[in-house]
Amino acid sequence: MQPLSCPFLTNPELGFLDTKTRQEPFAWPVRVYYEDSDAQGLVYFANYFKFMERARTEWLRSLGIEQDALMRDDRRVFVVVDTHADFLEPARFNDELLVTVNLVSLARASFLIEQQIFRNSLDGALLCRGTTRAALLSTDTLKPVRVPASLFEGSPP
Amino acid sequence: MQPLSCPFLTNPELGFLDTKTRQEPFAWPVRVYYEDSDAQGLVYFANYFKFMERARTEWLRSLGIEQDALMRDDRRVFVVVDTHADFLEPARFNDELLVTVNLVSLARASFLIEQQIFRNSLDGALLCRGTTRAALLSTDTLKPVRVPASLFEGSPP
Amino acid sequence: MQPLSCPFLTNPELGFLDTKTRQEPFAWPVRVYYEDSDAQGLVYFANYFKFMERARTEWLRSLGIEQDALMRDDRRVFVVVDTHADFLEPARFNDELLVTVNLVSLARASFLIEQQIFRNSLDGALLCRGTTRAALLSTDTLKPVRVPASLFEGSPP
Amino acid sequence: MQPLSCPFLTNPELGFLDTKTRQEPFAWPVRVYYEDSDAQGLVYFANYFKFMERARTEWLRSLGIEQDALMRDDRRVFVVVDTHADFLEPARFNDELLVTVNLVSLARASFLIEQQIFRNSLDGALLCRGTTRAALLSTDTLKPVRVPASLFEGSPP
Image (cartoon, rainbow over all chains, first blue to last red):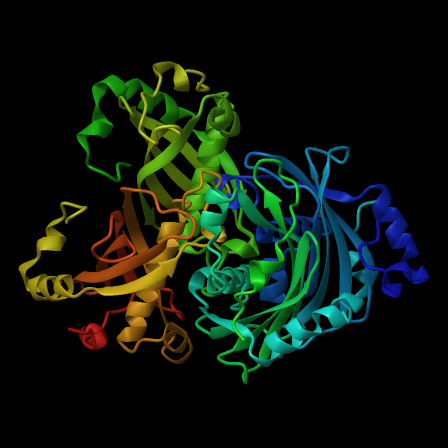
């Protein structure tokens, strides 16, 4: 699935990442609570972005990156540059969701993540898919800094 | 990836809407409270989508559309089909923002809105721009229904 | 700890519940994400109420009560009548919290829950304590209905 | 209305404040958007705390206190020590609310605010009432500092 027909996404240099993560994507469960729903009885659309951000945080943690330490010790923060989501089917109050994280490309100062949200499991209904481009910023200069090549090397197979 | 330079957007049939709304876009002020900020001291990225939704709600209200009455009396709700945002400069706690709403195209069962978020005024820094495609759903069938041509006719000049 | 000096809380009839649940309280882990923090770098105060509500939802689930089925099949919803929280020490971005749930009293049409939020574990720093009184409402009449005595009987020891 | 039967609230020294503010309370309008509602079709209970905090922020602004400048220039932040709310009648999606702010007591290092939320106007239905005790903290020491007597003197009559 390629929500964006962007050459960036098919960069051969990044093919191995793509292949590797697509086979066994990182996935994080999220339960839908009352706080996430709205008067339509469904998940409020902006909250899917929160769910995807939680999964990205847990994916970074699985790679050994704790963002509070990164901010405090390395004076670096991740910021979202742009993001997009397609809402295919609604999630409802009390649903259990599974949110995947795939790193699809890594540029000098930013990287692109592709995510999917399923009901219950990877075999469940696909409810939402999204992309997020993030950069690494220095908290001192508020300018982008190089994303070290080694940053995502701890990625689980 | 070019979320905005879409043929859809320059559809000559829609040119009049585009021209008209760009000249005097609907704009809605939003104050940034503690609830909107995060530990980076900036507005949490997903909250810009809330700000844009508030402005769309007020734009609909300016056209005479009250969404609670629409749901209760007409059994219709608007749902977001897809949405996208570019984050250009961060908004900070206590900032006063101005959020614009431009209807850029109207299809049979959906419409596309383009929005911008400025600091203070239309002359202030452009912080965020986004697009949202929305559909009108029947609450009985949960299927899209035709968006009546007259719906947006109350649009202010 | 008794945040409210209310005779209700020391009702001897309810002592057994109190004793039982204090010994092995239901506890639910909550991770603090960026969405939960604010520009002070701490958890935004109103979000502790969300964390406590998540833990109550999971406590109800542990008793066999799924609130979506309760709403759909039995046409009953829980509503918060009043709530209170003392903020003792701040939780920070990326903290792992543990939220307890103790049923301290059960009246005809409402019940009182006492909760605590610890950092990391029950041996960690106590960050917040709160009480919530909830009622069971009919979705048809929007009036309180009797809370069945059996409702909380599935409570784990 | 005295939600807490606390001697603090009837301190004769503070009677003048009480009387003054009760006569013409500061009030701030809040519109209920989809983001504020939940699957019960009503405002999610924790969001009333956000509404009350927005009104407190605007009340402080009306007294000349901008909290971003307070944090940056004076290295002081307000923090909530404890808070309480009674939910009397539900607010619904698209409601227009009016949130009052009354300073009811001022101690050395904290102050107590009493708030009410009405539908539409001060003559409308009373939906919620709450109290919040806040302190002023040094961002350097994270310890409470004296709340200057002059702080709230700009209070409108």
